[in-house]
Image (cartoon, rainbow, N blue to C red; front, side):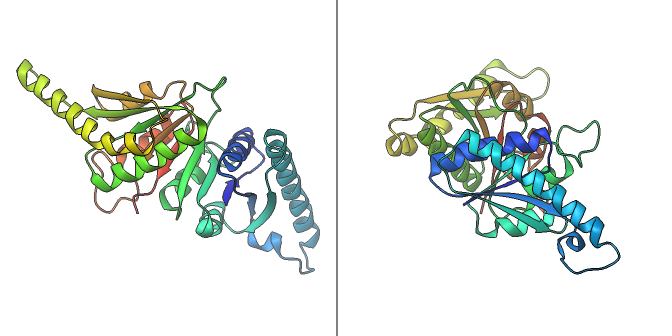
Length: 279
């Protein structure tokens, strides 16, 4: 099952469209969910009963619009709607306990002005029990290429590549696997720089060897680039159909729910972003 959280915003509708396409590819049902305060969802009569009904009616309209968008994208998938009680972040995280993927718009009605990603998307991406896709804007037309970020953390690297190769195979798309490395300070000897780059390419080639055998139909493009991971990934993902990163990665600090690069890409990714959990 895939769950998509919607809130009536354009980003939410884009997320519903992306989720419908993904549900069709995976051949799984789609749940379109909208969260409202708990007291609104209660049917008990009271002083604010009319207000609650008015808000529930509004929530039903939000769900109906998103469901319509999803059905126009993929008419044959199984779609249900759900009105969730509580804070959107907590409600979506709870609802995703049995889901294989949670999809959310990058910037909803509750977004803070000046930020490229809303608080709900940010909170969900860091705490959801499943992989999360944050949709900012759908590439048009699709490029037929996915981008996966690979670092030196074995478990993170494995989960990212598992997800990325499976997605590329489903879509019949090519996969660009990017490893960013940082050089030494100031005037470093040229031979050290060349050695570091050769080492990065060797590691990437070894890592991808097994995946090439398991997914022979996926065209793989290897890219080892010197530079800050955030800038390297932002450029690589320009116009891509999906960027895949691990929830922890380059320079992740112990105790943080998400790595620094993953957090940065929530704000800067130029295409839909998949945040893959490490466990």
